[in-house]
Image 1 (spheres, rainbow, N blue to C red):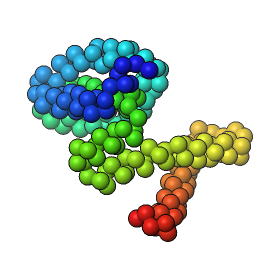
Image 2 (cartoon, one colour):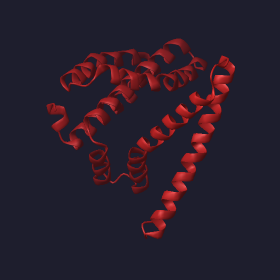
Image 3 (tube, rainbow, N blue to C red):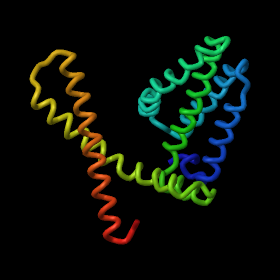
Length: 191
């Protein structure tokens, strides 16, 4: 466990928010200057002994969303530079949040957010998401295994169709499980 892991969650959250707000305040013509924070963040990740493969894999999950946001800047004047700047700023912000979440337990983050008077509903949503994400991943793993057992060899189109059906079914099962959890909480007087 590194010294960043042992640092107070308030300090880590404050530093992360300061960096993100600083990047947001950076003027559009100078947005590529945000890449100057990349060596700093990579150094923090190295000092924290984080697994770079896992960090990059989680970062890669957000890249399609970042590209979608950056593509909206194409319609502005100086679209290419604005798009690159927005992509760089978003990438640094996402990497900052990845390092924050990798070095701080979610329970400490939620406790810190509650002390900072973040709305209770948002804190509860974050806590439930962190608590039940493992259930969602297990359900997706079981569905993938069942789909692989039913399909021997198929075309790429049929695989994509099956994946779409699985995502829809996973959504329905997730909503059903959430309703059961809510009913159980109500019956115990929790909500």
